[in-house]
Length: 338
Image (cartoon, rainbow, N blue to C red; front, side):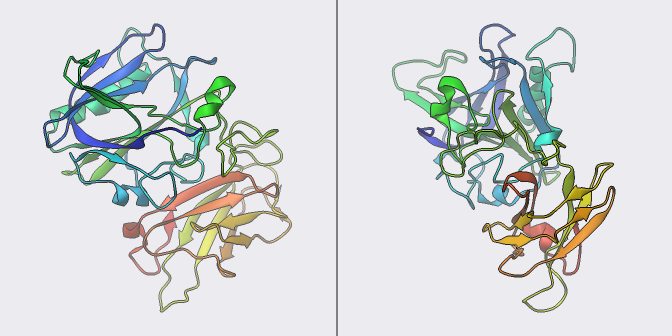
């Protein structure tokens, strides 16, 4: 069954601790909300299933409409419904990042800037040193345990959040945790820069093609989005005019690029908007290095208050996806680039 007690912790980071590289280590963060309640965030840096190294991506200028749905900074724990158009995360359907850009890092090694704990340290230490930094950790809550002090930082009651990683497309006995719109993540807002930093983690054993209802891996699909020839993100969404000049209905467009050295047959391919309205692409090959600009219509719409665009192949599987914010869509006639 899906995760219980899924939600987001909004708090201030005050300390952190590394657990090394033995057993199933975590990067531990000590946080406190504006009411003085203490929490611990346990961030996985090693998988129990082979391959043990985690996939990660850091977005140092994260722009996505979900940030507008987050609770007030420092407000503590907030339950989240596992559905779209909320602060709930879904690595596949939310178009948060390009899975092809994820990389692996060992959990903890001697020396600077060479492991996952170092990477987390870089941003968490910045948040600790900046009292105005707002930290948001999305995952599954544990506790509170009124009679038990926290096992890492010693505060009472023990209380916090874990499963701060992808929570679908699992294998083995972890499939019982599968669900949609219940993935985890670490987001930090630095108000002085008006900038969001996002860290997303996944296990190499997880799949990025999952059932829209159960979150289970779709049998016979590759682990990460590819086209039928096996190319990762061979055709990409590179731009969109989401707010054309003039009154509605507007002439919205989406531009695609074939990044490979060979033609890609787009017969049966579609674009999907935030509401999953489909727009068929012109049948036939898209030449190597060529672009294709597709006009909206037939129910396919790009809202001016933030949205998502997803590219689906002839099997209905996701090849690429992007998202944009209301701020990016504010200027009429401007092409949003991805």
